[in-house]
Length: 47
Image (tube, rainbow, N blue to C red; front, side, top):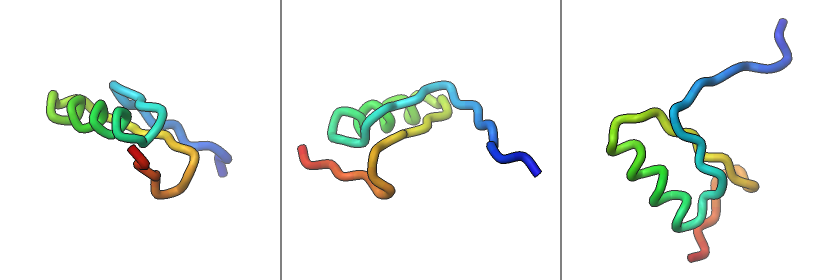
């Protein structure tokens, strides 16, 4: 059994604050696949 799983995305957004989430939304609206990576499990937009 493989220990890691590989995923492929068009855009990787690092950070789930206000700017990161807005960038992810805009990219998704443009029709590309998007992944968001953040420190916490559910994200925390304190902006």
